[in-house]
View 1 (spheres, helix red, strand yellow):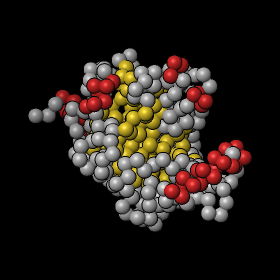
View 2 (cartoon, one colour):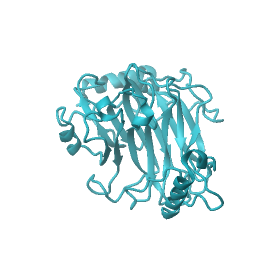
View 3 (cartoon, one colour):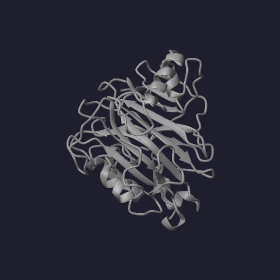
Length: 348
């Protein structure tokens, strides 16, 4: 039997085409650029369906869905039933809790309050796809392509976050593999990207580590030589040699669209991103994101990996901010109706 929401969805598709199901049409302009791709094929693809906001009706290509309704508002109960298997700040309600005050659908949303009593710090939940039960330290199942969709609301006075939402990957036996900030990736152990944004404007950009990124020795002047030497030793230890010729740091590379693509503030919006792994040693990897169904930025020339064993297996709802970054301000954010999929998800 087809439910009334599915009938509405079918009617919309019949009248407006599959693109309207995700809040976009063929005539809708792109927000950002496509780095040289003139084909108008990046806003919506031909396989889009009309999924529900909640998790009551899974699409065939969905891998995870969370509408934050399990646990009836109790964070620990929800988390125990969820498929998120790594968290930061979940033990502090001033950093992470469930909220009934601001929701996109249903009765609850995930709230990261960055409260004063918690040092204005952010929080994180991360999903790693396990081959068996969803638990910490598991053997990982990996994919060549992942999509990640969340409805998001920033408080009206939201200003800043250090790092935001990401898709990444490692080799299957490396659940804890990604502690490599400042290291030059080798193409064997880590891949992926985050979407971050500028303070105040919320203009978005990719923040990406990859083997061909540039590095700088200037970090010695502001991090100190001892710190840089220790970090270089750490990079060597994890198979990402970075300082063979000189002391240096390799921070993520920023890639912004030609036209600004800001995230809305003070209202719910739909955010979706995707990463498609490159053919090993070939510059054909893809990363893209959409804001309310409209493409913000896309790159299709990425080279993250040189071995096929490195693939995609994790996503993070990350609102990473430390006390020193926050400048005495609570940067509050809510997340709701999250889906991870191997195909396009959309906003309906």
